[in-house]
Amino acid sequence: PETVSQETATWRIELPGAGHASPIVWGDRVFTVAAIAETEQRVLLCLDRSSGKILWQEDVLKSALEGKHRLNSHASSTPATDGEHIFTAFLDQSEVVVSAHDFTGKKVWQVRPGTFASKHGFCSSPILFEDKVIVNCDHDGPGYIVALARADGRELWRINRPNQTRSYCVPIIREMAGRTQMVLSGTKCVASYDPRDGRQLWIIDGPTEQFVASLVYDEKSGLLLMSGGFPEHHILAIKPDGQGNVTDTHIQWRTNKGVAYVPSPICESGWFLIVSDSGIAHCFDAAKGAIAWGERMKEHHASLVSAEGKVWFMNDFGTMRVIKPGASYNLLGESELEEKIFASPALSEGQIFIRGEKTLLCLGQRQSRPAAH
Image 1 (cartoon, rainbow, N blue to C red):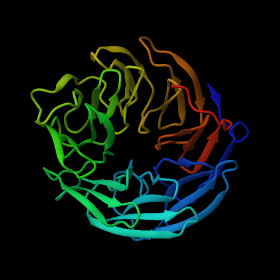
Image 2: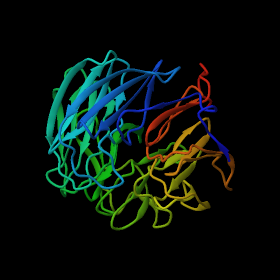
Image 3: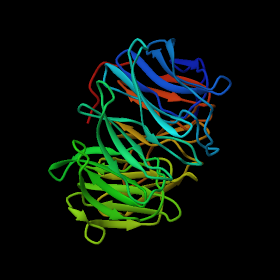
Image 4: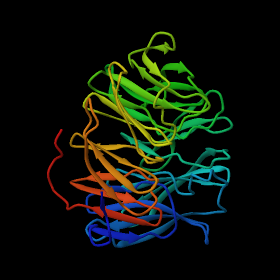
């Protein structure tokens, strides 16, 4: 495999602090967050897309660092943007802090929607839907999902979650079975809600206690694919057209093979691709659940990403593989980035933005054309 050096990367910039949050891209700007342990700052960073130069760095929170799992960070929640504001989520001791900054770095609002307790730390990435910022706060206590107004942070709805067990899942919002659904696994269930008002549509009991990976949707088969978790390991393929408790009626297929706990899987061209934390990758036929192939790739915590019909696998040691999904293993390229990587890459207009342990790097040249579907 080729080694990506300072010379072969488009740019590589050392970041202040540390974090597992992924970079996000909007136009000529790249954003990410970091925690600076020495000063107990959690910061939002804005970089110039073409050069990697840090344009500004703003404090979001200054507070004693929370306890965490050795594989977590104090800046693990990936920010979100609508092109006007950048939304972030951090933990201040026992309180969730959600903030909005504008593109100059000015704080627009900051709210504390509730408490959060977990010995493994915090990792709830905000997601945007219409006029809302939605944050999953499943924790070891009365868990909740909250929707805040993008404009001013006021609360629009709140879901009280069952079972009081931590999860770190980012909900997905998709048009499925003729309705807009927000689905996530967590707190001993898989549940679908209407993201406009928080009303529950359907729920599946279990299949295990704790979840980290987000669900993915296969448009070809119309199935939702779930992977998790702890202490039991399951992959479920779920029909999303149910109502009420659908535990016994809407699971299309299930397996205990190839399960991922932390890295989120992906669906591409009717294939379901997944890599376990220990680094065993599998490709399933999404509709039927048959395994097409398996491949060993070393420990993995970054989620899979796709573009132009290809899927990127990024292991903890900085090996990046580009795979063409299909009935057999088809490796299109392999690169060594020479840095530990836990964050998922961001893909935009022909470029890949990768957040390593200490740096942010950009590969490729920007191409202003729509990606092929």
